[in-house]
Length: 488
Ligand SMILES: [Zn+2]
Image (cartoon, rainbow, N blue to C red):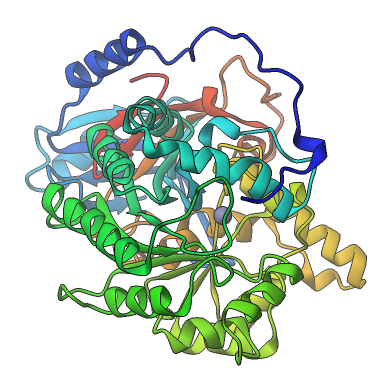
């Protein structure tokens, strides 16, 4: 057991009442949900915003968007003049449920959080005093270990999944704790509340503290498979939940466990290729430590590649201190990067060179990395990505490193979909994709100050991204179903 750094020691426990997420409050939200989830054909008419590419943010001042009973987008048409006209034009949509957006509302793709630690939810906003190692030992290990109490997992995850949906995260790639039971609870909650998710049990068999460690590689592998099997049982077609293999990183997973997990992710003992989520090159210390656990590898990516970890369904968090060879391998293997600007700043890890990754052809999405960052929303991650890129401009005296607005919207939506290997299904409003969407209203009584003399539609979107919060997220749809939002 490692020592807790002095700066984290508290003299006494606060005597506080139990958390506010009581069963009664959950029941009320659940009742609302069951009453209001209708699911026939739908037509939306009004302002529509989505990314066509990294550089092209398409905004229609007025367009009609049609969704069928299965949640698939059947048309996005900017030539019709009303929802009624769209219903008339498209066969089968004659009796569709129509929604005409208000003058300050717009449709925005559901946001994608490509890296989030579910068990760390109660630690949001605390623990930023130290560096990564101090934070892991002082905060992360103790709280992750505590999820051996499955009831705690049920209570925390029930609240967290609803909050993240309310904040517009329609898809989340979750890290869990090293407990298959708690991991299964997380999958159950995402299915219950209708959130798209990638979920796996966290695997750790060395170097962790506070008992946050599994007894052997064999047990870790067995338990990981229990979580995979559970997800395949509750959602066999992966309509919402996809299983994931999760070594914490090279410093916390021994070669035998790494080898077993690599085989599992490549189709053994099942048949399908499974998602992977792991950390890579978060700090220079982490890279040095990885080399002591896996001697002989010059580059982090070569270690992961050796175990079969790099493929198109791989999500690598952080990737700050990458070598040229790392970047090359990520491109070759089509592995994606979760950029967590807020977390990297809070823990002073460094600045991910997103422009360089994008130029090289690496897939990049955004993550909250709860609880290392303080932002629950991908809006915060967009702002952080923007700011980190500007700091790189300052440090390297190179204006080309700046991420512009179109690019940060892309990273939060289409980029995230690419990193999750789901860009054929979600990320924007192309015909044939699933309707994961937010109805945003920038006319609410919140921080967004619309004056009436904004030049164009883009200004409204910028106001929301930089000034908005969950108050402006009025409706949240996943697979065409209304699952959250202030107007639910
Ligand atoms: Zn992380």
